[in-house]
Image (cartoon, rainbow, N blue to C red; front, side, top):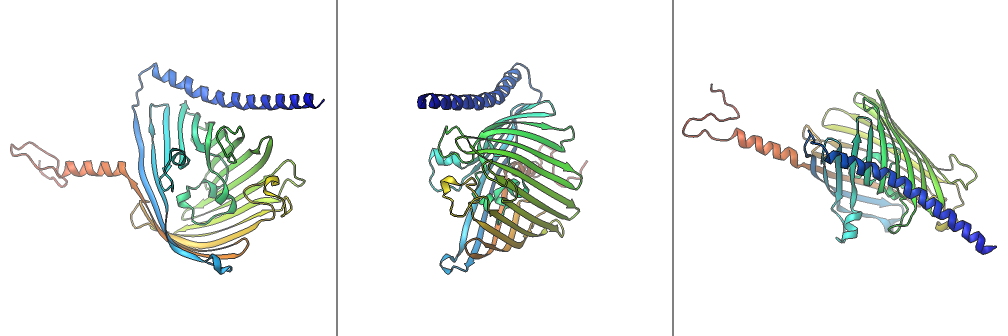
Length: 389
């Protein structure tokens, strides 16, 4: 009888695994078929690089805590990123971003430092199929910001793994105000290659005048055949120089008694732009997990990111200054307070710069043309302030 029971369990697991493989292979096959069709015709839109950029951020930070043994301070390099994006044909585009500030440079660590590396296939104006290392699509505006643009954060944001291998299909409306995307990817909780646990993510990016949304439903396998759900609702309102967003995320296992408002995160941020150079922001948030007893062992916890019994809050005020008329250089400063086991006061100031090589090449080529000297034989050349006939 026991052997028969084990047989049916193994059979069910094999069927579940086969379903995962069929779904992923279906998405990947669309990319393969699309590429083979592209090779059969002349493409009117040649290979193009749209983004070629380095970006870096350096901070000075001082931490003062109620537990004085945890006090710290000093300068630190937060990020060095390399980004490359472009088109292979009018239907295929590629996306790559690499974090270069990794401690031990081996092949595996270098690949872990890759935020994303994926290929898009654009089927007409409305559908996009993608495969590779992607963002794990979870709703909310704090989660959606690039890490280099987040200064203090929720427990969930700090602990979640944002990038995994997977495949997705997206639908866009004609005006590109709405995108609905479905993704199957490795679970953020994988600890080794080919662990065979997955995440299923459905997300909606919407823009309706002053109101924008990033809503998602997520079914995430944290252990084999054990799932946690996320309902993430990101809401943003923009009025001229003032904008604010409110994120709410509910996390729950089907095994717990109360599905809503026991394990959740609530975040709010207000931004005000005085002009193109100066910004002031106020941000605060709250994470709590009362879905299980605080003494629950980690192995038995439904939520591995905000653990049972944790209650965390944070708030702060800060600002940006952009000395140029673009986002290439940014100075920031903020003061924040957070509390988990003890209270921490955080004072931070820093510098972010983005080195856009494509813009630099265009500028250098323009300068080369404009500063070219007139040949002795009198042939016309371009000069920056040439008023001659």
